[in-house]
Length: 242
Image (cartoon, rainbow, N blue to C red; front, side, top):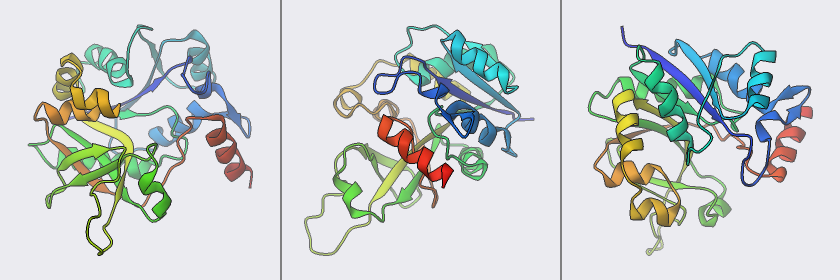
């Protein structure tokens, strides 16, 4: 039987918002919101929070979650989850769920898992949504994705892609940062060197594309608020409290 583990990387010393997994809204931490969504998945058999900090580990214990401590020198969430994935040998698929996505849903998680399981030629799956707010097209914090007719990712960029040269209005798709990996593909990717495109765009998934790995995308209507800044936190807090 093929088995899937959801691994949630959670750092304390986040660059833009320190201790964000521990921030509370209505008495519940951001990391607990994410964990609760993951636990509702129908396709995953295990949920693990991968953290480098005892304060986050203590919080996870308080709400009944499972954690594993990781090296505090990892450069990315993928490196952190790869460390945990190697210890959990019985799992064929690993879903990387960011610890700062409190509005993620079990349905979105299962869509990413199902998309990868259904395409045996793919290494990774991820989600995209159609952009309806045209202001997001030029926002570098909103990562755009273009894909082929079979929903294989061609490129991800912080720039508007495609470039709209003609008058006809183009469709744009935003990337939602949830990834499902074949475990061997996750380990392979994290062992590869950073590529020039990855460094230029600061987008880790470009390392996979530039090394001919196949990323399958699935379309969703979900538009979650990720918590990267204090403004994001205040926005999420307002949405929950209202």
